[in-house]
Each structure stands twice: as C-alpha cells, then as structure tokens.
Length: 131
Image (cartoon, rainbow, N blue to C red; front, side):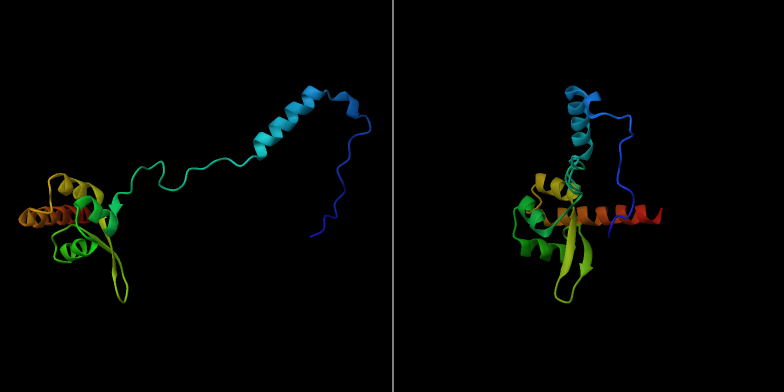
C-alpha cells in the first residue's frame, strides 16, 4: 500500500539546534527500549514440569521398556489416560505424581501394589469428575 498522507513536518519554530546531544541520546535509548523485543518465557518453562508424562518419560522413571509400560497401562497396572486413538496406536499420558511415587517405592516389582494404586487413582479421578 502506498502512503498518501502528508509527510511529517516540524513546526516552523522548531530548530534542530534546540536539542542537545544528551537529550537526543536519551530519546534514542528510550525508543530502543520500547521497540526492542521483550523476552517471553516459552510455554511450560515457568509452570515447572508437566503434570502428565509420556510413555518414554514413564519408562525412564520406572526403569522399564516403553513396551512394558504400554502393556502395563493396557492391563490396568499403571494409571494412564488415553489422549487420542489413532488407527494404529493410542497416545497415552501418565500422571506425574503417581508415577513418581510408584517409582520411588520400586513399583516395577510389586504387581499387586500397582493394580491397587491404579484402581485408587482411577476412583479418585472419577469422584472428582462426578462432583
């Protein structure tokens, strides 16, 4: 687009000699500060770690393979949420707090403990959504 407006003109009484170098420098610094891009934190940086873990992250915390994590999730031994279902695979997310707690207790060895914990977690989520 072409600017058809009138160009900016100084008043007839304005003189370039009126401005001191210090004043011009202050104006330039002010303009540079105002026009400089402000750093913005990336999404999730300030919020801390995500409350949900991927299969890979869960496998690393639990000390097992990704496939074992998927099998345990499908069997109901690990708490998880299916985010989306594709034609070939499901996208799962695991709640960070329970997985970290299970990993701290050595959850890979206690099968019954995993099922009980998962059942309690699912019940608490269902109770929250019903309320």
